[in-house]
Length: 636
Picture 1 (cartoon, rainbow, N blue to C red):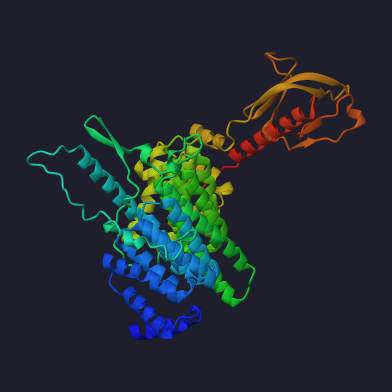
Picture 2 (spheres, rainbow, N blue to C red):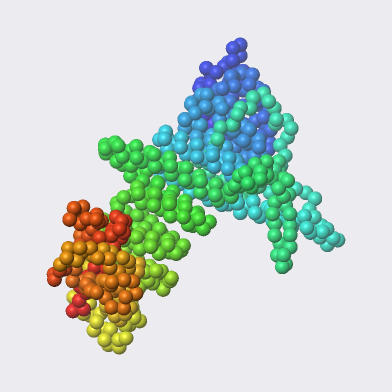
């Protein structure tokens, strides 16, 4: 196998032979290089390869495949021996050669970027490694050099390697502090030999400049170096971090000295924000998602079967990477960023009904709960249920699972400081009832329990507990009430909040609390007072009157603080509230509206258009409020 590889390499690179070089000399040199490249990793291998640089430079052009391969193997060997700066130097030379030979967007360049990125990562250069990884990821995704599922695996591997490197870096810093602050005694001697984890210095002979260094392109995570044990790697010896230790209440606090940090890290905080490795990782995943999102929307334009399969694969990759990104954001308590990530992926899923869409909705709702965004919780729950109704059968196990989750969230929210906690509990009861009825219709749901029987009992207990805790009823009366509610309702009725919510209010609460619950839906009980002009029915003249909306009655007086009203209208008796067009007969007023009543119509005018619209809006709101309340029937 080695012989075949050697012969193929000799044949491939023959066209890069320098003028005047004998073919035999060329073949012998290439053979020595390949055999050295195939040796096991060691410092001896690195020295051997470096010693061959002048020879290979003599027989072939610098921009040849054999030179690119040699630089790549040197970079990989140096990385495995913890010689990260040398690894990056040789990797850049290999990258430069590959860009010339194969193009900047080639798979060969992506492979080299993977190695460069890994070397930078193991040297704690998180930002540089991220940029390299992103460039490699985009090259592979756009060039189609691998599957999208493999790209997801690359992401997962990069996250794991970054996390392991952070842990290793912290361990090294802690050990360094311990060594600095332990005084040597007769019984405690500091080691005089280098630690087995410390990278060894490369021989000066390896700095040969027979092949010129080229400027580095950004690089990325390595697919070719799988299986490398990163726990035996450390930070490069060329970047020494001096730390400062302080003691507080017996605890040791360790922080790196700014004098030994890289230049960009010593810039004033007013000029830049120094990102943590996790911040950089989150940004990496975000950039990868941006790339995939662009490809996704481009793929949607092609309606062929092959393109549809590709679209599905991209969508799966987007979901997976977005979930990883949001997980990191959650761990860093960047909840608003996590919410944005969830919302972006839900836009792409667009009520597809996939299992992942359900998981993302649940994660989004739970995130809103964490930061006490009660209104957003309710709004997202409504969207979640709409998605469930559209995507799943009603009744079905899937929709029951959605309703059960939403019921639990709203029940917990009703115990918090939510401004709509009374209505939240009613909606929780509504979703529990619906889940119970669906369970009966389809023969049972498990909702995470061992059996459908246990689940059915648990759902019923939830319903009974809500009623028992909020109404002055005996246990046996609660049982009768629950049986009646289950018997008299339908799934369709319960899913229609505009119909069933008000109906349930009087079951859950006593009358005075039920009014408070209804009031939550309108923020406050509609009320307003102020001067309006009233048309006198007999004299056809305008009179100034003080109007006051109090609960479900509109009173009007001669003046403010008049103890006796001139008249009143019951809000529920008003048939309609109408803004009137401008008419000469209303002079001198132009902002007029009327309240149509069975006995008589009240013609009113305001001083301004805004005032008129405000009165019409508040009266309309009050009419709707009291109609909702009066339409509730307790008949089972």
